[in-house]
Length: 59
Image 1 (cartoon, rainbow, N blue to C red):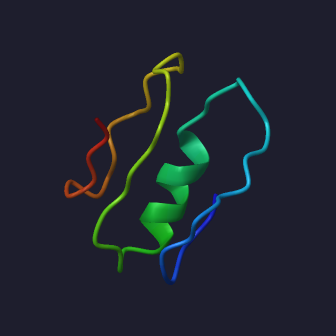
Image 2 (image 1 turned 180 degrees about the vertical axis):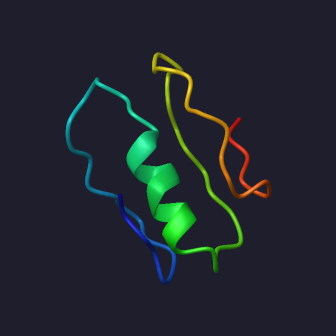
């Protein structure tokens, strides 16, 4: 996961395949001071369990 403090022209990409939302959702549960989340994905991933934080949404 990459967190940004300001806009960047290039973002390093790693991996390819094996999408898993669980680490991101776990991070959000521990760090609830976020304003939003954008996930770029092809959608081929297991459906995550409903979040405990009801403000979290994945589209």
